[in-house]
Image 1 (cartoon, rainbow, N blue to C red):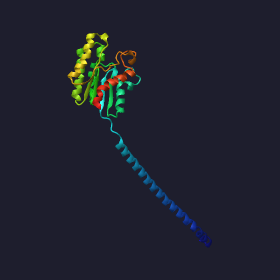
Image 2: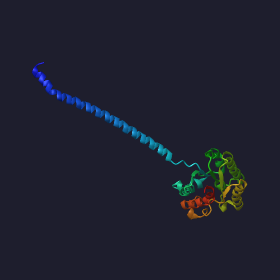
Image 3: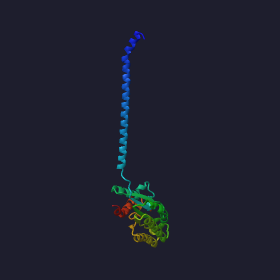
Length: 247
Protein backbone atom coordinates (compact mmCIF):
# COMPACT_ATOMS: atom_id res chain seq x y z
CA UNK A 1 0.00 0.00 0.00
CA UNK A 2 1.45 3.38 -0.95
CA UNK A 3 1.87 6.15 1.52
CA UNK A 4 -0.88 8.09 -0.19
CA UNK A 5 -3.30 5.21 0.11
CA UNK A 6 -2.37 4.68 3.75
CA UNK A 7 -2.99 8.33 4.50
CA UNK A 8 -6.35 8.13 2.72
CA UNK A 9 -7.39 5.08 4.80
CA UNK A 10 -6.47 6.78 8.05
CA UNK A 11 -8.43 9.84 7.05
CA UNK A 12 -11.60 7.67 6.69
CA UNK A 13 -11.20 5.70 9.93
CA UNK A 14 -13.14 8.20 12.09
CA UNK A 15 -16.04 8.02 9.62
CA UNK A 16 -16.00 4.22 9.64
CA UNK A 17 -15.89 4.10 13.40
CA UNK A 18 -18.73 6.59 13.60
CA UNK A 19 -20.87 4.52 11.22
CA UNK A 20 -20.24 1.35 13.21
CA UNK A 21 -21.17 3.23 16.38
CA UNK A 22 -24.38 4.46 14.74
CA UNK A 23 -25.27 0.92 13.63
CA UNK A 24 -24.57 -0.41 17.11
CA UNK A 25 -26.72 2.29 18.74
CA UNK A 26 -29.49 1.61 16.22
CA UNK A 27 -29.34 -2.09 17.07
CA UNK A 28 -29.62 -1.31 20.79
CA UNK A 29 -32.57 0.99 20.19
CA UNK A 30 -34.37 -1.71 18.18
CA UNK A 31 -33.87 -4.20 20.99
CA UNK A 32 -35.18 -1.71 23.52
CA UNK A 33 -38.20 -0.93 21.34
CA UNK A 34 -39.04 -4.61 20.92
CA UNK A 35 -38.65 -5.19 24.61
CA UNK A 36 -40.90 -2.25 25.45
CA UNK A 37 -43.47 -3.33 22.89
CA UNK A 38 -43.54 -6.86 24.33
CA UNK A 39 -44.02 -5.43 27.80
CA UNK A 40 -46.82 -3.17 26.55
CA UNK A 41 -48.48 -6.09 24.76
CA UNK A 42 -48.25 -8.21 27.88
CA UNK A 43 -49.74 -5.43 29.98
CA UNK A 44 -52.55 -4.95 27.46
CA UNK A 45 -53.23 -8.68 27.47
CA UNK A 46 -53.21 -8.70 31.25
CA UNK A 47 -55.66 -5.80 31.36
CA UNK A 48 -57.96 -7.47 28.86
CA UNK A 49 -57.82 -10.68 30.82
CA UNK A 50 -58.59 -8.82 34.05
CA UNK A 51 -61.48 -6.97 32.42
CA UNK A 52 -62.87 -10.25 31.18
CA UNK A 53 -62.79 -11.72 34.66
CA UNK A 54 -64.41 -8.59 36.06
CA UNK A 55 -67.18 -8.69 33.50
CA UNK A 56 -67.84 -12.35 34.22
CA UNK A 57 -67.99 -11.64 37.93
CA UNK A 58 -70.27 -8.62 37.62
CA UNK A 59 -72.70 -10.07 35.08
CA UNK A 60 -76.05 -10.55 36.85
CA UNK A 61 -77.32 -14.08 37.11
CA UNK A 62 -80.13 -15.11 34.80
CA UNK A 63 -83.56 -15.20 36.37
CA UNK A 64 -84.34 -18.69 37.59
CA UNK A 65 -87.92 -18.14 38.74
CA UNK A 66 -90.52 -18.53 36.04
CA UNK A 67 -94.24 -18.03 35.60
CA UNK A 68 -95.53 -20.28 32.83
CA UNK A 69 -98.86 -19.23 31.31
CA UNK A 70 -100.39 -22.27 29.67
CA UNK A 71 -103.39 -21.30 27.64
CA UNK A 72 -105.20 -20.59 24.40
CA UNK A 73 -105.58 -17.52 22.15
CA UNK A 74 -106.21 -15.20 25.10
CA UNK A 75 -102.77 -16.00 26.49
CA UNK A 76 -101.18 -16.11 23.04
CA UNK A 77 -102.40 -12.58 22.28
CA UNK A 78 -104.43 -13.46 19.21
CA UNK A 79 -105.13 -10.52 16.88
CA UNK A 80 -102.59 -8.14 18.41
CA UNK A 81 -99.80 -6.66 16.30
CA UNK A 82 -97.38 -7.08 19.18
CA UNK A 83 -97.86 -10.03 21.52
CA UNK A 84 -96.13 -8.02 24.24
CA UNK A 85 -99.41 -6.10 24.43
CA UNK A 86 -101.14 -9.29 25.59
CA UNK A 87 -101.58 -9.85 29.31
CA UNK A 88 -98.42 -12.03 29.67
CA UNK A 89 -96.27 -9.18 28.35
CA UNK A 90 -98.02 -6.68 30.60
CA UNK A 91 -97.42 -8.94 33.60
CA UNK A 92 -93.71 -9.08 32.75
CA UNK A 93 -93.60 -5.28 32.63
CA UNK A 94 -95.24 -5.09 36.05
CA UNK A 95 -92.85 -7.66 37.48
CA UNK A 96 -89.82 -5.86 36.04
CA UNK A 97 -91.00 -2.50 37.38
CA UNK A 98 -91.12 -4.05 40.86
CA UNK A 99 -87.66 -5.61 40.32
CA UNK A 100 -88.97 -9.09 41.04
CA UNK A 101 -86.86 -12.05 39.97
CA UNK A 102 -89.39 -13.72 37.68
CA UNK A 103 -89.56 -14.42 33.95
CA UNK A 104 -92.98 -14.83 32.34
CA UNK A 105 -93.18 -17.61 29.75
CA UNK A 106 -96.02 -17.31 27.26
CA UNK A 107 -97.14 -20.82 26.36
CA UNK A 108 -100.41 -19.85 24.74
CA UNK A 109 -101.61 -21.50 21.52
CA UNK A 110 -104.48 -20.00 19.56
CA UNK A 111 -107.36 -22.43 19.17
CA UNK A 112 -106.07 -24.70 21.93
CA UNK A 113 -108.58 -26.97 23.64
CA UNK A 114 -108.23 -28.81 26.93
CA UNK A 115 -107.45 -31.95 24.91
CA UNK A 116 -104.69 -30.13 23.04
CA UNK A 117 -103.26 -28.87 26.31
CA UNK A 118 -103.32 -32.36 27.71
CA UNK A 119 -101.32 -33.63 24.72
CA UNK A 120 -98.49 -31.10 25.14
CA UNK A 121 -98.25 -30.69 28.91
CA UNK A 122 -95.67 -33.48 29.31
CA UNK A 123 -92.94 -31.62 27.45
CA UNK A 124 -93.99 -28.10 28.51
CA UNK A 125 -93.75 -28.91 32.21
CA UNK A 126 -90.12 -29.99 31.76
CA UNK A 127 -89.32 -26.30 32.28
CA UNK A 128 -90.20 -26.80 35.97
CA UNK A 129 -91.84 -23.38 36.42
CA UNK A 130 -92.16 -21.73 39.79
CA UNK A 131 -95.77 -20.85 39.01
CA UNK A 132 -98.04 -22.48 36.43
CA UNK A 133 -101.21 -20.72 35.29
CA UNK A 134 -103.73 -22.94 33.51
CA UNK A 135 -105.98 -20.98 31.15
CA UNK A 136 -107.86 -23.48 28.98
CA UNK A 137 -111.43 -24.59 28.36
CA UNK A 138 -112.99 -21.65 26.51
CA UNK A 139 -112.67 -23.33 23.13
CA UNK A 140 -114.19 -26.49 24.56
CA UNK A 141 -117.22 -24.53 25.67
CA UNK A 142 -117.62 -22.65 22.39
CA UNK A 143 -117.55 -26.00 20.57
CA UNK A 144 -120.01 -27.62 22.93
CA UNK A 145 -117.54 -30.26 24.13
CA UNK A 146 -119.10 -32.43 26.87
CA UNK A 147 -118.28 -30.92 30.26
CA UNK A 148 -117.14 -34.28 31.60
CA UNK A 149 -114.47 -34.37 28.91
CA UNK A 150 -113.27 -30.83 29.61
CA UNK A 151 -113.15 -31.51 33.33
CA UNK A 152 -111.18 -34.75 32.82
CA UNK A 153 -108.64 -33.07 30.53
CA UNK A 154 -108.05 -30.16 32.89
CA UNK A 155 -107.67 -32.57 35.80
CA UNK A 156 -105.17 -34.61 33.79
CA UNK A 157 -103.09 -31.47 33.14
CA UNK A 158 -103.14 -30.59 36.83
CA UNK A 159 -102.10 -34.13 37.74
CA UNK A 160 -99.12 -34.03 35.37
CA UNK A 161 -97.90 -30.73 36.81
CA UNK A 162 -98.22 -32.04 40.36
CA UNK A 163 -96.44 -35.26 39.52
CA UNK A 164 -93.59 -33.97 37.35
CA UNK A 165 -93.04 -30.59 39.00
CA UNK A 166 -94.33 -30.98 42.56
CA UNK A 167 -92.86 -27.68 43.79
CA UNK A 168 -94.77 -25.69 41.18
CA UNK A 169 -97.65 -23.51 42.38
CA UNK A 170 -100.71 -23.91 40.16
CA UNK A 171 -103.20 -21.16 39.38
CA UNK A 172 -106.43 -22.08 37.62
CA UNK A 173 -108.09 -19.40 35.50
CA UNK A 174 -111.86 -19.72 35.32
CA UNK A 175 -113.87 -19.00 32.19
CA UNK A 176 -117.49 -18.21 31.35
CA UNK A 177 -119.49 -18.61 28.16
CA UNK A 178 -121.92 -16.31 26.36
CA UNK A 179 -125.60 -16.98 27.19
CA UNK A 180 -126.38 -18.26 23.70
CA UNK A 181 -124.73 -21.57 24.70
CA UNK A 182 -127.70 -22.32 26.95
CA UNK A 183 -128.21 -21.54 30.62
CA UNK A 184 -127.68 -25.06 31.95
CA UNK A 185 -124.48 -25.61 29.96
CA UNK A 186 -123.00 -22.19 30.77
CA UNK A 187 -123.80 -22.53 34.47
CA UNK A 188 -122.21 -25.97 34.74
CA UNK A 189 -119.27 -24.81 32.64
CA UNK A 190 -118.56 -21.93 35.04
CA UNK A 191 -118.89 -24.22 38.05
CA UNK A 192 -116.45 -26.88 36.83
CA UNK A 193 -113.53 -24.46 37.23
CA UNK A 194 -114.51 -23.58 40.78
CA UNK A 195 -114.87 -27.27 41.60
CA UNK A 196 -111.45 -28.14 40.15
CA UNK A 197 -109.79 -25.32 42.09
CA UNK A 198 -111.38 -26.44 45.35
CA UNK A 199 -110.73 -30.15 44.85
CA UNK A 200 -107.08 -29.57 44.00
CA UNK A 201 -106.49 -26.73 46.46
CA UNK A 202 -105.41 -24.34 43.71
CA UNK A 203 -105.10 -20.57 43.58
CA UNK A 204 -108.11 -19.46 41.56
CA UNK A 205 -109.11 -16.64 39.22
CA UNK A 206 -112.93 -16.98 38.99
CA UNK A 207 -113.20 -15.31 35.58
CA UNK A 208 -110.07 -14.21 33.72
CA UNK A 209 -112.12 -11.97 31.40
CA UNK A 210 -113.86 -10.17 34.25
CA UNK A 211 -114.87 -6.61 33.20
CA UNK A 212 -113.77 -7.42 29.63
CA UNK A 213 -115.98 -10.20 28.29
CA UNK A 214 -119.00 -8.90 26.38
CA UNK A 215 -117.80 -5.26 26.34
CA UNK A 216 -117.33 -4.21 22.69
CA UNK A 217 -114.86 -1.38 23.39
CA UNK A 218 -112.49 -3.80 25.13
CA UNK A 219 -112.61 -6.52 22.51
CA UNK A 220 -111.61 -6.97 18.90
CA UNK A 221 -114.17 -7.08 16.10
CA UNK A 222 -114.90 -10.75 16.75
CA UNK A 223 -116.28 -9.78 20.14
CA UNK A 224 -114.30 -12.61 21.78
CA UNK A 225 -110.64 -11.66 21.96
CA UNK A 226 -109.53 -8.69 24.07
CA UNK A 227 -107.90 -5.70 22.41
CA UNK A 228 -104.93 -3.88 23.94
CA UNK A 229 -107.05 -2.08 26.52
CA UNK A 230 -108.88 -5.31 27.29
CA UNK A 231 -105.61 -7.14 27.92
CA UNK A 232 -104.59 -4.50 30.45
CA UNK A 233 -107.67 -5.39 32.47
CA UNK A 234 -107.03 -9.11 32.04
CA UNK A 235 -103.50 -8.53 33.37
CA UNK A 236 -105.01 -6.79 36.41
CA UNK A 237 -107.34 -9.75 36.96
CA UNK A 238 -104.43 -12.18 36.89
CA UNK A 239 -102.17 -9.93 38.97
CA UNK A 240 -104.73 -9.83 41.77
CA UNK A 241 -104.18 -13.57 42.31
CA UNK A 242 -100.54 -13.69 41.25
CA UNK A 243 -99.24 -10.79 43.34
CA UNK A 244 -99.39 -12.51 46.76
CA UNK A 245 -97.45 -15.44 45.31
CA UNK A 246 -94.50 -13.41 44.01
CA UNK A 247 -94.19 -10.52 46.46
